[in-house]
Length: 107
Image 1 (cartoon, rainbow, N blue to C red):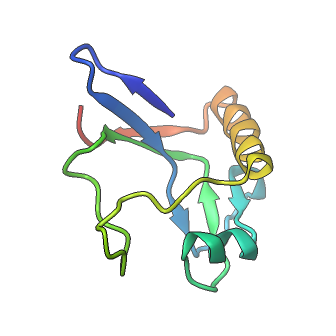
Image 2 (image 1 turned 90 degrees about the vertical axis):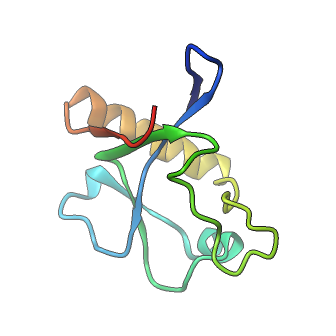
C-alpha cells in the first residue's frame, strides 16, 4: 500500500516474507512456487507474514537492491491478482482481529 505524506513523498507499507512456517496459518500466506520463480526468489517454501507491517519512504534508506539485479532495482515484481487479493483479505481479517504490528522505519 502506498500513501503520500504531507510533503508529497510516497510512504509504503510492506509485509515481510519468511521461510519460517507460520504457527497460525490464518496469519500468513504461502507463496506459490511459480510466483517465487517469476520473482527470482529461491526454491525454499516461503510465506508472507500478515502480522508485521513495515512503513518507509519510497525511495529511501530502508530499500536494498534486488540481489544480482544489474540495474540495482529495489522491486522484485507484482503479485498475481488472486494472490494479492488473498493477502489483502487475510490481512484485513488480521487487522480487524487486532493482530497487526506496524513499524515505522522512516517517515
